[in-house]
Image (tube, rainbow, N blue to C red; front, side, top):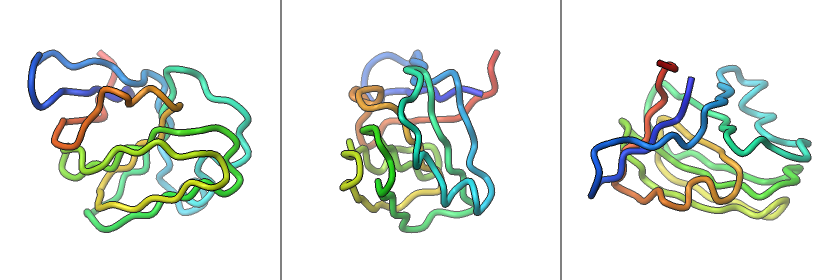
Length: 120
């Protein structure tokens, strides 16, 4: 699986934000998230898929590395935020949340499309 970014304006070709995607699809994996990890590969993302869009919180308690977090509803980016280790907290509506190493989502903006795809 991979995370592909399609800008709202410009090129119709998507760029790969992450080619190593872990899916947090259980309550335990969603609760743990990226806590206690000391580093992340550059092409890594943790995906939190949900059945429906709702306001979702992301906290950085016990997370040791800065993250770029993307909130997505129906494939459209609602919010992008860089969160600091330990102190970061943010909230937005989403049916998919993506956590990536800081800097990986620097070109992603609200209104862009971001999708999870199977590898070709």
